Length: 404
Ligand code: HEM
Image 1 (spheres, rainbow, N blue to C red):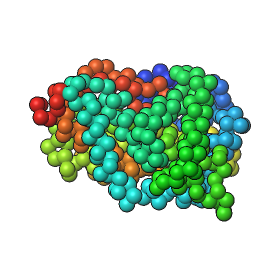
Image 2 (image 1 turned 180 degrees about the vertical axis):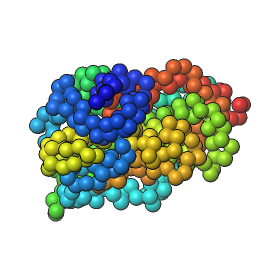
Image 3 (image 1 turned 30 degrees about the horizontal axis):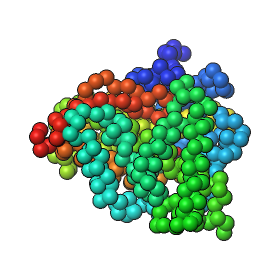
Image 4 (image 1 turned 60 degrees about the vertical axis):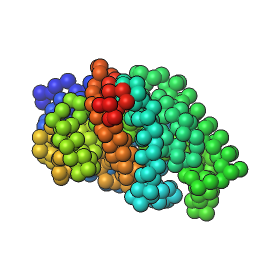
């Protein structure tokens, strides 16, 4: 078969965002593609919407067996990570997820809205008189780190430190050495232990205290279960939400007609535009599963033990599901994107919360910094796992709306 150069591992493919030209070719020519791996046994790259949903929902594809990253972990690392529900299969997964799911249902997320609005106001207050800033680190990254700190019941400023560790952990080992990545996880786990000690002495109405008091089958969580739960909640909601906000703003800058349309009918279009940003940006590039038995996917024979990798950014540009998939359309409806997962048991726990954070922050930016514009080249994150701008310089009239 005539094959173009496909490389979904090397950072060069992600230096300008996700490799949509490769994804387009794969969807059209080889949607369940066997991808060689220089340091591994290879994997199936799944690029169509329908196949990604199948893998997400079918219990024969396991998160427990080999974890969620393409690179196989060493046995100790994998065993430790299995303390997190992201690395579990049902029924074990269901028991862990139930411990915290109540905190993330729409009602609980909505109850946080006014506090999130206050935090977003504070973030814009800090930059508004400067007339310029880095949208990624000084606006988009601030809110998710504050919100998770708020939920966990830790100081807001600690949320920023946790988020720096998250970023290291999610970088490719080409960009951040494995030793530094491991050090960042250790710092996060030690921090979680220190929080546990504090919450035992001073219990409060927060997620950290709730985790400490949780029971699985009549037993409290072990220290490892508690610390990895903490790490998952911090890791999952930080750079994903930040990348969506920054990537979404970049899409607006690059499509001024869409920015104009959104501004002209902000109340009606904001939630619709957020869904389009989720589709278009797709901050999580992939999740891996491992086949637990011989099976067939998209006409290919998948063997027991094979790695199966779901490319959400590709599924979200599938021309069989989305008209003009490469067009950024703030009024797109319906929009069956799967940026939060393809609907299986691991579907993003924080989806409602993330949507509120994104809507609130975008409204704050668009109303208080009405002439905000890109002011320099975008630098992309060095990662084949999480996608988004690493730096996005912006400028706006100092003082914002009042003087704009
Ligand atoms: C734009 C923002 C976000 C995106 C794009 C996103 C995306 C995802 C994706 C793709 C998954 C895996 C789905 C699967 O394997 O089927 C996931 C899982 C998860 N997300 Fe999010 N997420 C976001 C924000 C958040 C936030 C704010 C939180 C909460 C603090 C959160 C918590 C989680 C958790 C705990 C899981 C694991 C769920 C499980 O294993 O059952 N996420 N997310």
